[in-house]
Length: 145
Image (cartoon, rainbow, N blue to C red):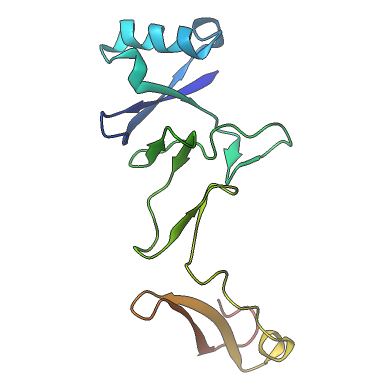
């Protein structure tokens, strides 16, 4: 079974449709099949893989188009990647990992003391207004989050 994303002229994913392997021996064959049976132009059907996330194949194979397409995601024809909706307006696309990254990098690592505090739980949360990571401290000890 192969999967194809139905995209708009603006490259937004409208639906994802499975197609039997015998009807999609190639991407072009799958596109022609879908055009015929779904009344949607062939060039607006793009093959996608359920086994690819953040440019990694879940079973160790070759990743295909960055991420599995989802309704509302965006097709980037230039980079051949399906992008999820950005979690924050300031975040940027990381082409290598087909994922969104904060403009200042990953959240800082928690210290051993924070990880092992018996009374408090710690985590970092993105603050869009300051474009930085805020340390959040809440009662509960390790595993509070």
